[in-house]
Image (tube, rainbow, N blue to C red; front, side, top):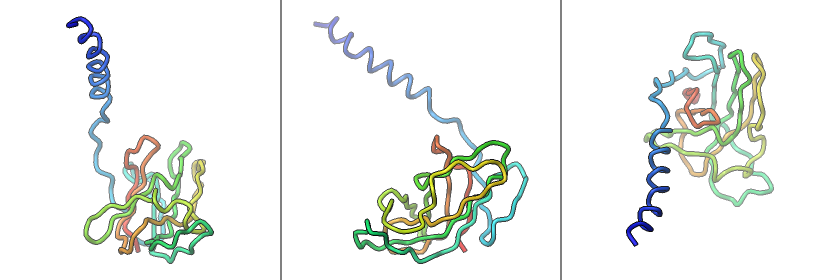
Length: 155
């Protein structure tokens, strides 16, 4: 019986060791870009231009009528590599410091920022909304690995 218990717990222990070893390395915080038009800044910390302004989201045919807080976002790829853009990579923070993801509002509004890959020098524009009635003050964008790569104040 003891041998069977070890056999059952060994894979779990190995899995836990693997997951613990795969934790992301500590990253330096991303600089917050000021609100206003996206300016191309080629400094090391701002290779991805991100700007956002508050906007009124227009409900789509999929809308369930929930209240949405929206921003019109512009992403500019100033890197030398392709940049993936996806509405799932964005979040907004309100005046209280509460962070909102857009997963509950996907497809609920028109002109949603497209899922695309930007070549160097290209930009994408569109809406990002999160469920709730709040005032967005900051928008953040992550990479496909969910590491924050850009942050900007909402105008």
